[in-house]
Image 1: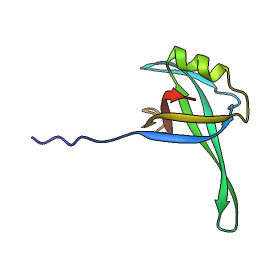
Image 2: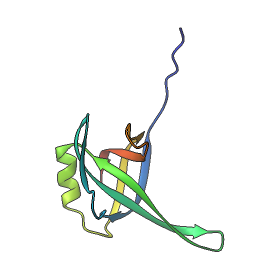
Image 3: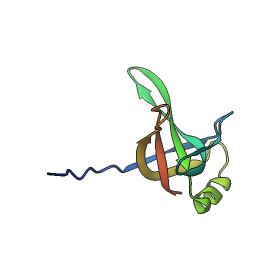
Image 4: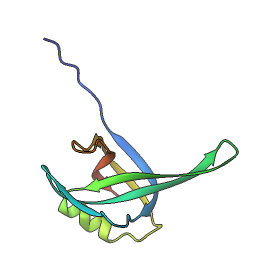
Length: 97
């Protein structure tokens, strides 16, 4: 049997955007807080705004997020994951600056 080794790492940057409503949740792997990284860019003659959802499980990383305000610059490193229940994609945060 042959196993493939997959690489799954992402690094995104943009502006902090706090989500309204379901900012906190819990899965089988623990409690998390989520926010989005907002990216504004040019797109076919206009502008496009993307909101990339990030989940923060680690308590120390949550403290780092607490020091951020809406619109602050942010860089997040982690892994792209999908929710087992809904299939929604998100970045599982491993570092935040």
